[in-house]
Length: 249
Image (cartoon, rainbow, N blue to C red; front, top):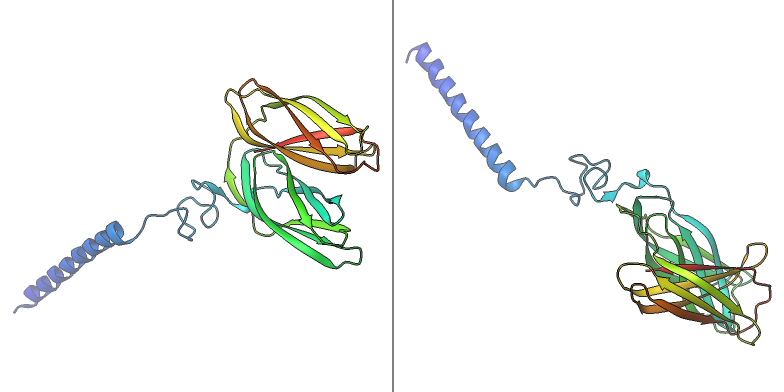
């Protein structure tokens, strides 16, 4: 075999190998290599972080402003029974988030009486009251209560939803042994609303929270007015000067 024939044979061999490699790569990328997704645990496509940002629904945590915990309190219902309450604010106008949380409550000596775990979702710009009713501590008394998120919030792009339930009036009657608050509300939404949580926050002249209560509206039709009420088991120790109403859905 002449040198030229040998070179020609080697060239053909490498050309065949090249086309075989291209064909194998095409098969691999078409059938075996998965396309980038927002759930593959890899930073790919136009993501700003692993499985977040870009075209992904979940937003990277560094692109969001952390939620604010305004205050956390516990309120005695009857001896040995407490309500745990915290007010949270989402300062982001186009992001909602979900996260697990924990209430921790202590006696006057700093002894941990117990913990309560839960999960919540907070909408853009929402000011939300997280309310845990009827926590039993036997003969102990809660002196301090703390609230914290125990996992990194899962941020998602979301449109702001306006509250279309209007408070028409609020009437607090403290003339009886058990104070009662009547709240008249109206649904200004085009559709009926169901399972609406109504929370009343009572404050004194200094703006400090004196007590909190919660009730539910099972269903309120479009344009309907409905009277809801809340009661407390004992008189307030301070004068109530303002009442804030929150609606959680």
